[in-house]
Image (tube, rainbow, N blue to C red; front, side, top):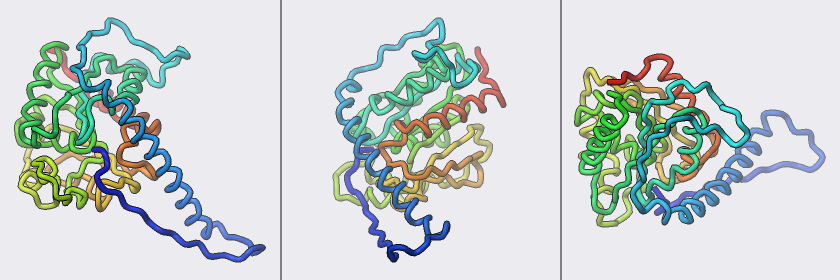
Length: 289
Protein backbone atom coordinates (compact mmCIF):
# COMPACT_ATOMS: atom_id res chain seq x y z
CA UNK A 1 0.00 0.00 0.00
CA UNK A 2 1.46 3.33 -1.01
CA UNK A 3 0.72 6.26 1.32
CA UNK A 4 -2.56 8.15 1.21
CA UNK A 5 -2.05 9.72 4.63
CA UNK A 6 0.88 10.02 7.00
CA UNK A 7 1.43 10.78 10.66
CA UNK A 8 4.19 12.66 12.44
CA UNK A 9 5.24 12.71 16.05
CA UNK A 10 6.91 15.65 17.70
CA UNK A 11 9.49 14.94 20.42
CA UNK A 12 11.07 17.62 22.59
CA UNK A 13 14.34 16.88 24.37
CA UNK A 14 15.34 19.11 27.26
CA UNK A 15 18.84 19.24 28.74
CA UNK A 16 21.66 21.46 29.93
CA UNK A 17 25.10 21.73 28.38
CA UNK A 18 27.87 20.14 30.40
CA UNK A 19 25.58 17.90 32.49
CA UNK A 20 26.32 14.17 32.47
CA UNK A 21 23.71 12.04 30.73
CA UNK A 22 22.57 8.74 32.18
CA UNK A 23 21.95 5.63 30.08
CA UNK A 24 18.22 5.90 30.66
CA UNK A 25 18.08 9.47 29.43
CA UNK A 26 19.70 8.39 26.16
CA UNK A 27 16.78 6.13 25.29
CA UNK A 28 14.56 8.92 23.89
CA UNK A 29 17.51 10.15 21.82
CA UNK A 30 18.10 6.69 20.40
CA UNK A 31 14.40 6.24 19.72
CA UNK A 32 14.26 9.58 17.92
CA UNK A 33 17.38 8.79 15.92
CA UNK A 34 15.90 5.44 14.89
CA UNK A 35 12.61 7.07 13.92
CA UNK A 36 14.33 9.76 11.86
CA UNK A 37 16.50 7.20 10.09
CA UNK A 38 13.50 4.93 9.52
CA UNK A 39 11.51 7.82 8.08
CA UNK A 40 14.36 8.66 5.71
CA UNK A 41 14.56 5.03 4.59
CA UNK A 42 10.78 5.02 4.09
CA UNK A 43 10.98 8.04 1.79
CA UNK A 44 13.70 6.28 -0.21
CA UNK A 45 11.57 3.12 -0.35
CA UNK A 46 8.57 5.05 -1.66
CA UNK A 47 10.73 6.63 -4.37
CA UNK A 48 12.13 3.21 -5.28
CA UNK A 49 8.64 1.68 -5.37
CA UNK A 50 7.39 4.40 -7.70
CA UNK A 51 10.43 4.00 -9.95
CA UNK A 52 10.02 0.21 -10.11
CA UNK A 53 6.25 0.27 -10.58
CA UNK A 54 6.29 0.25 -14.42
CA UNK A 55 8.49 -2.86 -14.42
CA UNK A 56 5.86 -4.76 -12.46
CA UNK A 57 2.88 -3.94 -14.64
CA UNK A 58 3.29 -6.87 -17.00
CA UNK A 59 2.67 -10.49 -16.21
CA UNK A 60 5.53 -12.43 -14.70
CA UNK A 61 7.31 -14.91 -16.93
CA UNK A 62 6.98 -18.20 -15.10
CA UNK A 63 10.16 -20.21 -15.27
CA UNK A 64 11.43 -23.30 -13.48
CA UNK A 65 15.06 -23.09 -12.41
CA UNK A 66 17.05 -26.30 -12.56
CA UNK A 67 19.74 -25.08 -10.16
CA UNK A 68 20.24 -22.56 -7.40
CA UNK A 69 21.49 -19.08 -8.15
CA UNK A 70 23.90 -18.01 -5.37
CA UNK A 71 24.69 -14.37 -4.62
CA UNK A 72 27.50 -12.70 -6.62
CA UNK A 73 30.01 -13.32 -3.82
CA UNK A 74 29.33 -17.04 -4.00
CA UNK A 75 28.02 -17.33 -0.45
CA UNK A 76 24.65 -18.67 0.63
CA UNK A 77 23.08 -17.17 3.77
CA UNK A 78 21.37 -20.44 4.62
CA UNK A 79 21.67 -24.07 3.52
CA UNK A 80 19.69 -24.83 0.40
CA UNK A 81 16.97 -26.63 2.33
CA UNK A 82 13.49 -26.12 1.00
CA UNK A 83 14.88 -25.02 -2.35
CA UNK A 84 11.93 -26.56 -4.18
CA UNK A 85 9.31 -25.19 -1.77
CA UNK A 86 7.10 -22.78 -3.77
CA UNK A 87 6.78 -19.24 -2.39
CA UNK A 88 4.00 -16.97 -3.67
CA UNK A 89 4.11 -13.20 -3.09
CA UNK A 90 0.96 -11.04 -2.92
CA UNK A 91 1.33 -7.25 -3.15
CA UNK A 92 -0.83 -4.62 -1.50
CA UNK A 93 -2.78 -1.52 -2.42
CA UNK A 94 -1.26 0.99 -4.83
CA UNK A 95 1.55 -1.35 -5.83
CA UNK A 96 2.29 -4.41 -7.94
CA UNK A 97 4.77 -7.29 -7.96
CA UNK A 98 7.69 -4.85 -8.37
CA UNK A 99 7.43 -4.06 -4.64
CA UNK A 100 8.99 -7.49 -4.00
CA UNK A 101 12.18 -6.89 -5.99
CA UNK A 102 14.43 -7.06 -2.90
CA UNK A 103 12.46 -9.79 -1.12
CA UNK A 104 12.34 -11.97 -4.22
CA UNK A 105 16.10 -11.69 -4.65
CA UNK A 106 16.66 -12.42 -0.95
CA UNK A 107 14.49 -15.53 -1.07
CA UNK A 108 16.30 -16.88 -4.11
CA UNK A 109 19.68 -16.18 -2.54
CA UNK A 110 18.49 -18.04 0.56
CA UNK A 111 17.80 -21.12 -1.54
CA UNK A 112 14.14 -20.74 -2.50
CA UNK A 113 14.21 -21.07 -6.27
CA UNK A 114 10.47 -21.32 -6.92
CA UNK A 115 9.35 -17.76 -6.17
CA UNK A 116 6.42 -16.23 -8.04
CA UNK A 117 4.05 -13.29 -7.61
CA UNK A 118 0.35 -12.67 -8.01
CA UNK A 119 -0.35 -9.46 -9.91
CA UNK A 120 -3.88 -8.13 -9.45
CA UNK A 121 -5.61 -4.78 -9.81
CA UNK A 122 -6.72 -3.49 -6.41
CA UNK A 123 -8.85 -0.83 -8.11
CA UNK A 124 -11.16 -3.40 -9.69
CA UNK A 125 -10.88 -6.17 -7.07
CA UNK A 126 -11.98 -6.25 -3.46
CA UNK A 127 -10.59 -8.66 -0.84
CA UNK A 128 -12.89 -11.52 -1.81
CA UNK A 129 -12.38 -11.32 -5.58
CA UNK A 130 -8.62 -10.95 -5.13
CA UNK A 131 -8.69 -14.02 -2.88
CA UNK A 132 -10.34 -15.98 -5.70
CA UNK A 133 -7.52 -14.91 -8.04
CA UNK A 134 -5.03 -16.05 -5.41
CA UNK A 135 -6.77 -19.41 -5.14
CA UNK A 136 -6.41 -19.93 -8.89
CA UNK A 137 -2.74 -18.92 -8.79
CA UNK A 138 -2.00 -21.29 -5.90
CA UNK A 139 -3.52 -24.17 -7.86
CA UNK A 140 -1.42 -23.24 -10.88
CA UNK A 141 1.76 -23.12 -8.80
CA UNK A 142 0.99 -26.46 -7.15
CA UNK A 143 0.32 -28.10 -10.49
CA UNK A 144 3.49 -26.67 -12.06
CA UNK A 145 5.74 -27.52 -9.11
CA UNK A 146 4.28 -30.86 -8.12
CA UNK A 147 3.89 -29.67 -4.53
CA UNK A 148 0.72 -30.00 -2.51
CA UNK A 149 1.34 -26.88 -0.41
CA UNK A 150 3.03 -23.49 -0.77
CA UNK A 151 4.26 -20.62 1.37
CA UNK A 152 2.56 -17.23 0.86
CA UNK A 153 3.91 -13.78 1.76
CA UNK A 154 1.47 -10.86 1.68
CA UNK A 155 2.31 -7.18 2.04
CA UNK A 156 -0.35 -4.81 3.41
CA UNK A 157 -3.69 -5.56 1.70
CA UNK A 158 -2.05 -8.65 0.20
CA UNK A 159 -1.80 -10.22 3.64
CA UNK A 160 -5.52 -9.72 4.26
CA UNK A 161 -6.33 -11.17 0.84
CA UNK A 162 -4.18 -14.23 1.57
CA UNK A 163 -5.68 -14.62 5.03
CA UNK A 164 -9.20 -14.53 3.57
CA UNK A 165 -8.24 -17.27 1.12
CA UNK A 166 -6.76 -19.39 3.91
CA UNK A 167 -9.53 -18.91 6.49
CA UNK A 168 -12.66 -18.59 4.40
CA UNK A 169 -11.97 -20.49 1.17
CA UNK A 170 -10.23 -23.62 2.42
CA UNK A 171 -6.80 -22.33 1.49
CA UNK A 172 -5.25 -23.82 4.61
CA UNK A 173 -5.15 -27.11 2.71
CA UNK A 174 -2.71 -25.48 0.28
CA UNK A 175 -0.84 -22.87 2.36
CA UNK A 176 1.74 -24.16 4.82
CA UNK A 177 2.93 -20.77 6.13
CA UNK A 178 1.40 -17.33 5.58
CA UNK A 179 3.71 -14.39 6.33
CA UNK A 180 2.10 -10.94 6.48
CA UNK A 181 4.06 -7.69 6.33
CA UNK A 182 2.24 -4.65 7.70
CA UNK A 183 -1.22 -6.09 7.03
CA UNK A 184 -4.15 -4.39 8.82
CA UNK A 185 -5.62 -7.51 10.44
CA UNK A 186 -7.71 -5.32 12.75
CA UNK A 187 -8.22 -2.55 10.21
CA UNK A 188 -6.57 0.85 9.92
CA UNK A 189 -7.87 4.37 10.41
CA UNK A 190 -5.92 5.32 7.28
CA UNK A 191 -8.66 3.51 5.33
CA UNK A 192 -11.20 6.09 6.51
CA UNK A 193 -10.18 8.32 3.61
CA UNK A 194 -13.29 9.17 1.52
CA UNK A 195 -12.36 7.26 -1.62
CA UNK A 196 -14.93 5.21 -3.59
CA UNK A 197 -13.03 1.93 -3.45
CA UNK A 198 -14.37 -1.30 -2.00
CA UNK A 199 -10.96 -2.69 -1.03
CA UNK A 200 -10.18 0.42 1.01
CA UNK A 201 -13.54 0.26 2.79
CA UNK A 202 -12.88 -3.39 3.66
CA UNK A 203 -9.72 -2.35 5.54
CA UNK A 204 -11.64 -0.08 7.91
CA UNK A 205 -11.99 -1.32 11.50
CA UNK A 206 -15.20 -3.31 11.86
CA UNK A 207 -15.72 -3.90 8.13
CA UNK A 208 -17.71 -6.94 7.04
CA UNK A 209 -14.56 -8.67 5.80
CA UNK A 210 -12.65 -8.12 9.05
CA UNK A 211 -15.64 -9.23 11.11
CA UNK A 212 -15.83 -12.37 8.98
CA UNK A 213 -12.12 -13.04 9.52
CA UNK A 214 -12.52 -12.57 13.27
CA UNK A 215 -15.06 -15.40 13.34
CA UNK A 216 -14.30 -18.98 14.33
CA UNK A 217 -11.68 -20.84 12.29
CA UNK A 218 -11.43 -24.25 13.98
CA UNK A 219 -8.84 -26.65 12.63
CA UNK A 220 -7.11 -24.11 10.38
CA UNK A 221 -3.92 -25.86 9.30
CA UNK A 222 -1.86 -22.85 8.20
CA UNK A 223 0.91 -21.31 10.28
CA UNK A 224 0.71 -17.49 10.44
CA UNK A 225 3.61 -15.09 11.00
CA UNK A 226 2.67 -11.39 11.24
CA UNK A 227 5.35 -8.69 11.03
CA UNK A 228 4.26 -5.35 12.53
CA UNK A 229 6.29 -2.16 12.80
CA UNK A 230 6.13 0.70 15.30
CA UNK A 231 6.88 3.13 12.44
CA UNK A 232 4.18 1.94 10.04
CA UNK A 233 2.53 5.17 8.94
CA UNK A 234 -0.39 3.45 7.20
CA UNK A 235 -1.47 1.07 9.95
CA UNK A 236 -3.21 3.27 12.52
CA UNK A 237 -2.77 2.25 15.26
CA UNK A 238 0.35 0.27 14.41
CA UNK A 239 -0.66 -2.61 16.71
CA UNK A 240 -3.48 -3.42 14.28
CA UNK A 241 -0.94 -5.24 12.10
CA UNK A 242 -0.69 -7.89 14.81
CA UNK A 243 -2.74 -11.01 14.23
CA UNK A 244 -4.66 -12.18 17.29
CA UNK A 245 -7.10 -15.03 16.83
CA UNK A 246 -7.78 -17.90 19.26
CA UNK A 247 -8.11 -20.53 16.53
CA UNK A 248 -4.96 -19.67 14.54
CA UNK A 249 -1.33 -20.69 15.00
CA UNK A 250 0.23 -17.22 15.07
CA UNK A 251 3.66 -15.73 15.71
CA UNK A 252 3.75 -11.92 15.88
CA UNK A 253 7.12 -10.37 15.00
CA UNK A 254 7.67 -6.76 16.16
CA UNK A 255 9.88 -4.56 13.96
CA UNK A 256 11.48 -1.30 15.08
CA UNK A 257 11.74 1.85 12.95
CA UNK A 258 10.71 0.42 9.57
CA UNK A 259 8.02 2.15 7.50
CA UNK A 260 5.13 0.55 5.66
CA UNK A 261 6.57 0.55 2.14
CA UNK A 262 10.03 -0.34 3.48
CA UNK A 263 8.92 -3.64 5.03
CA UNK A 264 9.38 -5.90 1.95
CA UNK A 265 12.61 -4.05 1.03
CA UNK A 266 14.36 -3.84 4.41
CA UNK A 267 17.34 -6.17 4.73
CA UNK A 268 16.63 -7.11 8.34
CA UNK A 269 13.00 -7.96 7.55
CA UNK A 270 13.92 -9.90 4.42
CA UNK A 271 16.48 -11.92 6.38
CA UNK A 272 13.97 -12.75 9.09
CA UNK A 273 11.34 -13.78 6.53
CA UNK A 274 13.87 -16.17 4.98
CA UNK A 275 14.59 -17.64 8.40
CA UNK A 276 10.89 -18.06 9.12
CA UNK A 277 10.36 -20.06 5.92
CA UNK A 278 13.57 -22.03 6.38
CA UNK A 279 12.57 -23.00 9.93
CA UNK A 280 9.06 -23.88 8.77
CA UNK A 281 10.52 -26.24 6.20
CA UNK A 282 12.80 -27.91 8.75
CA UNK A 283 9.93 -28.40 11.19
CA UNK A 284 7.49 -29.75 8.61
CA UNK A 285 8.73 -30.28 5.03
CA UNK A 286 6.32 -29.49 2.24
CA UNK A 287 4.98 -32.57 0.52
CA UNK A 288 5.54 -33.09 -3.17
CA UNK A 289 2.84 -34.85 -5.10
